[in-house]
Length: 218
Image (tube, rainbow, N blue to C red):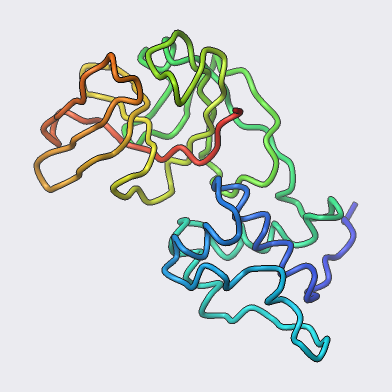
């Protein structure tokens, strides 16, 4: 049985931009800034002209936010109609495990994508990365940024940049949430959220994968 078609309306396009921003942990202005656009590009005041006519986002601006988030055009289209619960990408379940389990074999492939069995699931709306997963924080090593029981949604397909909050897995099997301070061809420098824990530096060859945290249940 086919669903109700999603009209390519002015409202639906702006809904999709808002949903894409939420899925990656940004406000519309934060998404614009990350994509190298003027921070006011997606402000609600910019969506209607002074004459009261609809103002449509440019194809260039949409292209830039897709590039910045690593989202595909298909995933963007999936957000259409998000406000009314029509879009096929509005709600989905992502795998959930704890950090202690994440260091075990069999939960991730070499690219950091979730595989295997033993995962629980959590309902998370609007995430566009089909390989996204969630990690549950345990302990106080990530205070004051993340607390015991917080859920972190991770998007392994999203590009990572200096200053991003990330999850990294070492070749030795340790999984950690850190601040990406520096990434070169040979070195990875990770900052600790908790001042009681030292920052870390690794050779790139000693890191299995790094993925960006796009949302946290705080």
